[in-house]
Amino acid sequence: MKITVLGATGQTGQYLVNQALQQGHTVTAIVRNPGKIAVHHDNLKVVEADIFSADSLKTHFKGQDVIMSCLGFQYSFFSGVTGYSLSMSSVIGAMREARVNKIITMTSWYTEPASGVQSPYLIRFLLLPMIRSVLTNMHEMEQVLHKTEDINWTVVRPPGLKNISATAQEFLTNEGYFVADSSGKPAGGSVGKGDVARFMLSLLNSNAWVKKGVAILTK
Ligand SMILES: NC(=O)c1ccc[n+]([C@@H]2O[C@H](COP(=O)([O-])OP(=O)(O)OC[C@H]3O[C@@H](n4cnc5c(N)ncnc54)[C@H](OP(=O)(O)O)[C@@H]3O)[C@@H](O)[C@H]2O)c1
Image 1: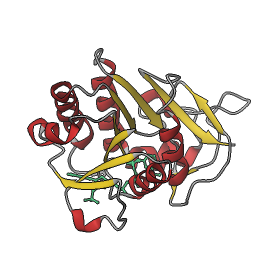
Image 2: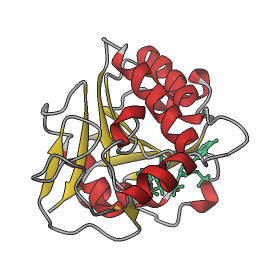
Image 3: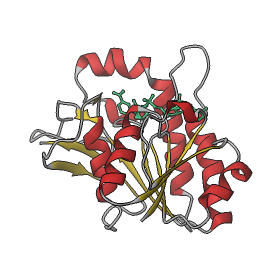
Image 4: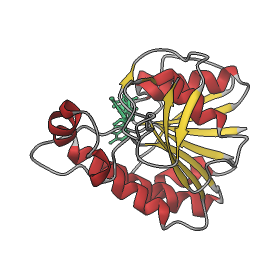
């Protein structure tokens, strides 16, 4: 397939690009700093474009089968995060103009504000308030996608991430904002960024989570 990757210079994005190339896909990495891409491959094209401009993106989207995004924006206590929703609006505009109709993107567990109420104490009272500005804007981006009827989107929601390569572990999935344990509360654990990339790529030939948000965890 012809895959365009946004956030290709990030940790998850790099796993995604490498795995996609290993699987024989043709990859266009859209970046703001081409010098950060370490991998060279005949099937990899690296281009510089502005993720907040549909005009800048649309040329590179033409002829692509799918857009995959691992973009990430830093949290701030002082100002709201806007990168997720603003870039997604531009991406959708560019997809429409370029006639690309599939996007797979990642956010996180607990993007919906009430979904963290059963999470462990430290997550609920320390982590979630700290990263709330990120989660809020991720949720706003998810709402943008929910309103997008003409595009096949999937939101992949991992819990805490570790910067490790893909494993062969089985995935647990849930259409929602976390994966529950047997008591119905959020299951503990984190996921490797390589495994998030592996899950996202597994959706290329599947319609299982189209127009849905799926929380993931590895067994
Ligand atoms: N850490 C966790 O435990 C956790 C848990 C769940 C979900 N997540 C989410 O998972 C996603 C991926 O995480 P990660 O650690 O792989 O991310 P990361 O390494 O921080 O990478 C972020 C990517 O976004 C790009 N980016 C940021 N601002 C940009 C801009 N203005 N224009 C163009 N590109 C921009 C970065 O480009 P540059 O390289 O040029 O900066 C980079 O490629 C993030 O959204 C993160 O919030 C994280």
